[in-house]
Amino acid sequence: MPFMALQTSDGNWLVRDENPAIALAPSATILVRYALGRPASSQQQHYCFGYNSVGDDALTYAEHEAQEIAKLVGGQAWTGALATDQFLRYAHDARIIHIASHCVYDAQQPLNSHLILGNETLSAQTIMDHVQIDTDLVVLSACVSGRSFVAVSDDQYGLQRAFLYAGTRSLLCSLWNASDVAALFVMDRFYRQLQAGVRIALALKHAVIAVRDLTRVDIIKQFQIWQLPTSAIPFELDGQHNDSPLADPRFWAGFMVIGKA
Image (tube, rainbow, N blue to C red; front, side):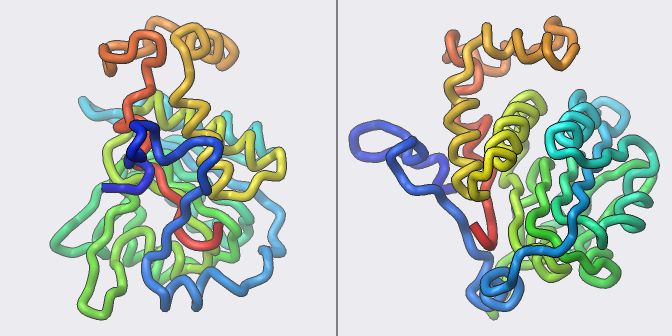
């Protein structure tokens, strides 16, 4: 159960304007060694990678998300079949890396957990063995990208550990299968906060609150701005919140910041 999903004794969400932002540490060792105490990255590039996948479980907005985030941060986007190749080629030059894709978590072999980026996959083991980055932030807008296996040493193994080990100071990821639409809106609001100079954990808090309060009219207007067909908006995802279709915590509570806040 993530902190983001908790409610206070008065029935309000723990995540609200007057409460602190939340950031997590995978372990004290990793937090101290790989995140805290390091100066900001000297890199300037922002790279976004997106892949919708194919078949019955294909995403609808992952590639669009990567392109829109690249516009917001003045970065470059790579989408489609060669996204993994481009990641391995350019990631070391990035200050911010954003990945929108499917993710597979392997509970038996956590280092085999991987992101599906085009024709190839990007596993936690590959990242730990072959990727060196100097980023302030890696965003994994991918289902279950935040899951990990806790070892006897209290270290956690999975994609979150891999990216921290590779050199990022902060990681934004998800604990469970997030709605494609909800992820698109959370990331849009999150990066708008970052561009306004808000710190990472606080930016996520503001983004979650904004998405939680979105009305149907707000969502339709934003889809029109993005030039996406409004007929594709899956309002049926939440029939209990007619005025705020994304108010249910399953749409936003799984997103979390790990590392430097």
